[in-house]
Image (cartoon, rainbow, N blue to C red):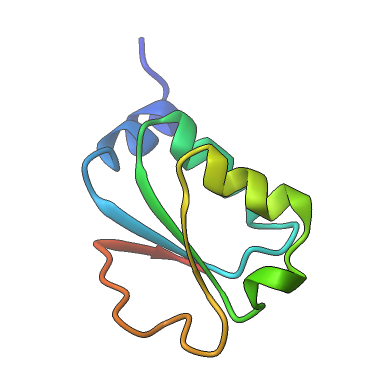
Length: 82
């Protein structure tokens, strides 16, 4: 039997998901969403040159990054986490 947790995250597959803020509290969420095959964009005001290695690793795992002062410009999402 599939748990409600797994059912919820499985239901997000195929939807565009934006996560606002890539601080330490949202990084596990991004990893979880990616593990369930979700299309994730991480949005953060911090410019790329000031990001730490853990955030840049999320990009190598498949997270698209929208960064800097214009980090919310043009963001389209079906689901938004903040």
